[in-house]
Amino acid sequence: MFNIAHLKHRLGQYGAVWVTAFLLTGFAIVISCLFKDLIAMTDKVLPVTLGLAVLALGVGVVATLISRETVGTKLAVVLGAVLLGLPLLWAPVSAAVVVAFFFDRSIEYSEVYATFQIRISDILYPLTQAVFGTTFQAVWTLFQGVATVVGFFSALSALWPRIRRLLGPEPATEA
Image (cartoon, rainbow, N blue to C red; front, side):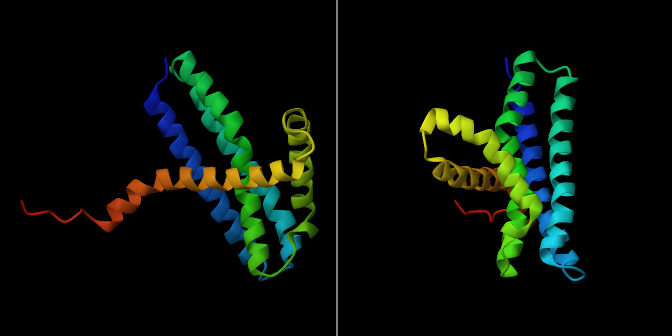
């Protein structure tokens, strides 16, 4: 069967990795823009943070695979990693897009961003052609939206207990 607690723990870690990848990328690009051009720094920062995000996802999967969890739990974690891998990779890329937006620059000049879009398109295009026909641009936009929503809600679910503790206990009601 499935160990729900383990799956929730891994999803919480996924949310933390998503937020960390987003914030780390955004912070690194903004700070490095003080010294060099935005696009040049995006091309240096994105490969590192994409690699770190993949490494973190892989560590979580491998840790589950070598654990004493049930086969069902291991399969669920692997399936989750496959389904959530692309949204996780979108976290650092979306941070670069946000930074470029605030700097009023076009992110499309970034080689890493362009390569990311091309590689993801190489993966998604055959799948979408088989399922949706010629509406690939709509599927790409849908992917970006779903990846952002998945990342936001996974981060929110991971961070909400900490936020509630920071806000303090709820006031007692009189009966």
